[in-house]
Image (cartoon, rainbow, N blue to C red; front, top):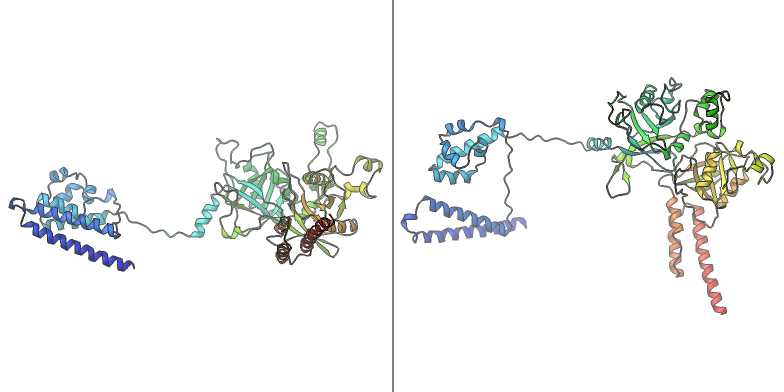
Length: 582
């Protein structure tokens, strides 16, 4: 089609040009002899070219523009040398605006023809000048280099220039924000690193037992404060770590770590093979509980280094009111080391106007952002759970079960703990000794929210909080409204799972298994949004069939969907019967 159009335009253009030439020849006899010179003929040719170009443009002919050639001034010969070689008058060219060789090289064939006719250059002369200008252009043209761009390298460069990201931990129910330091190496790609707690906790001194292999190739987690970021980086680097994550303090700004003590300070030397990031303060407790530690097999003194010491004890020891001694608080460990996880720190690209940020590398786009659901294995039975949205890492070991009622107040209450009065169960008084590192079960409700229950579970050292809710309620992810967020991971189960947990308390251990990606929390949300059901029985049956197809692999979800549908039918029948009696 394009060829056909171009041919027709060419024919019409040639026809118009020939007719115009024909008419110009007929007009020539009418022109007085005194104007029949070369300039008049040139003017008619120019007019003919303009008319032809205008007609071609109207017909849609694409006139290919000549590519502009960039010239290097350093490679252009002096103008006087060029004019001497061509035997041209510099004054005549100056009158026509030519002061430099670059300006002369700007002339095209038509420019040479127009000016040459005025200056009396014959065609041979014009041809020589045109060839010389082309030769100068070719000699002084800037050579264009074609650079082959590696898409993967370009993506890596863009990734490594990012300053914001998230820490994705194995079995974590949320991801954790970090800010990349102004110094250090790029964050490792496609590498899951074991998370190891720094000892001492602030990472300001030489890490203890660094001759062991626990720090090699790991991500070291340290508290903020006590020394500069660079000192922490050197301590982690000397222990063999690949990444240093510093937990921010609640009273400090969440900014990129610098290599000086102030923004205007001179940067101090830092390890260039260690990546450094500042983790948001809300993520610190959850990560700290899921970090391995070098205290394994090192005795109670090492365990004491991991403990958060009571302020009153620190004060009294400081002023000599009591003697300093190793005090191991079971609510803070050592069970947490058995829940050690691996992490990946991934820089994310955020687009203005969009709420989400995403990785750049394809290999990092497949990372599971969080564990939103899983199965609870209890004495040969399995029950579904959905995780809380406030974060934490699920334990990767069998856990004991400790039950409470609503957990709206710190357990056990004073009358039960001191006087053994009003205890819900016979072993509730020993709650403090059994709760550390265990699964704590509490019922939903009781006049408090999920976050309150989680804080009370965290205070007694629970590894995970399980909230039991009624079977007629869908499983939905729990949330916390305001920081500080709970330090313990939370999950929600239905009452059948809660009853099974209460039956095996003090007799056996249970395990929590994360669901394969993408989980099934969204399926429970879809079940919750099914109500209100269609009023028409046929459409309601179709809706149920669709839900059954999507949840065919889950007995719990199928039972919930069918019960919800059955309750809808019963309600309609009851309403119909009442209407008939009236």
